[in-house]
Length: 349
Image (cartoon, rainbow, N blue to C red):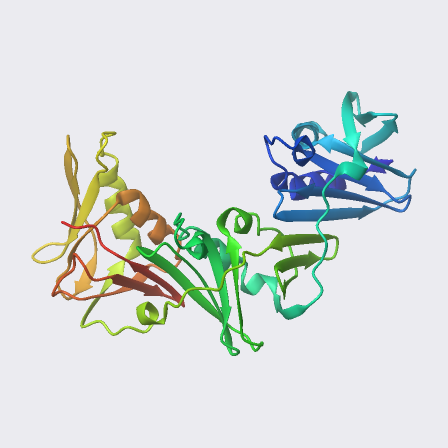
């Protein structure tokens, strides 16, 4: 079977992120490659997620499993059409004068996920893609409340609420969308695979499907319902101000570069008053840098890596910050910008 360079690379790039690098179940480190004679399909699985990517091309019928790492390596060096030949338990890949012969596994041992039947709603993928990626970074690791280890999608019938939380920080964004009320949780590691050039997102019972013209990806949902976070999103704060995002990010990045690698995590203190400064407090070093801010006086602590990630997750350069000056060590801080809401518990200073 002959595949164009773009078709081969496109298929390999789409499916290999779903294959495991290492696994006790060897088949999960492989990609299932199956030809019907008129179409070749590449399939990879990560237990709770799976993708099928196909190319319409004529050739002989076959079904084998090829190691994902080997496919990825060959795709990175191919600069012309790729020939794929199956000889017994060997797969031969050729591209110009480049050639490799690979061992394969039996295709009938590959664990295929089945598509769930009941559809809850369908939404245009581009409307939610970046919002899911935004929410992923706010997932925690909480064994007592496993839904906090998930990206949570909640339908109020008029909008979709997409968020992640570990109780100390929340990333929230909504999308206007008419649908029946439902709530699903997608495990953190599964949600990280929800990227790609898809067209629609179909929410099914126990499953989310992403679909394009030549690919279908399935993601198993967790058996939990989203937590209630209305009190954090709708809360009224007595104090507020406006931060220039770029200046605060630059200040945190600068002072954070002086953090030491000790057992105690270095933190920064963000102050306003006569001057607006970010100050690093660590066991070895000190550093300060200015940032642009206007509004009520504020003073709170943060870990530089985490707070920098928050700032990088929004695009606009103006952030509204809301807080309660009465006790900034125990009450949350809310940052809002263009529909995105970040709620964070400050670090005690």
